[in-house]
Image (cartoon, rainbow, N blue to C red):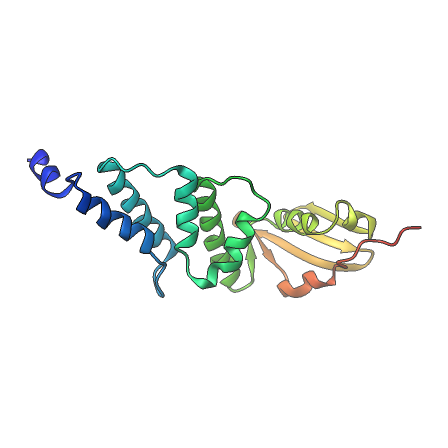
Amino acid sequence: MWKKLESLYLQKSLTNMLYLKQRLYQLRLGLGTSVGDHMDLFNQIVIDLVNVDVKIECEDQALLLLCSLSKSYESFVDTIVYERTNITLEDVNASLNSNELHKKVTSNQGSMVRDLSQQVDRLRRGLKAGSLDALGYKYMGQGGVSKVSKEALVGMKGVLQDELYVLQGKADTMTTFERSTPKEK
């Protein structure tokens, strides 16, 4: 029975190949469609193409998935491909999943952050290496409390709750960090 269904619906005809390629190349993330559902549909089309002997290289799959995202993901796409020489579908999937998780976490009341130290590391990467240290900022974490401070000023404070750090205060307190490097002496 499976062979009969396969012969009816997975024929390796030019028409089927054209139809599947059109679905892949015209796929767009629709308003109200979750990124997870979009990625599932993308993967199903790729599997259908493989079943009719159409091979799409991993990097091409990654780029096609990025191209299928809506305009609201434009800066995400720019960020993920910036200064890269190659990319895989796994890279894109992981980044999209991380991005969606980040949106969910930050939309929760209390601005829950998965790991405050990751946020500090990301901030440090955004600044020149060592500039937080050079500006006198310190990161401390103990007893379920994590702080980034300069002298008496606490720029960020998070309390560990259910394996997540909950940011105390507003997330915009991050602006208290200076974004310039210290002047040469």
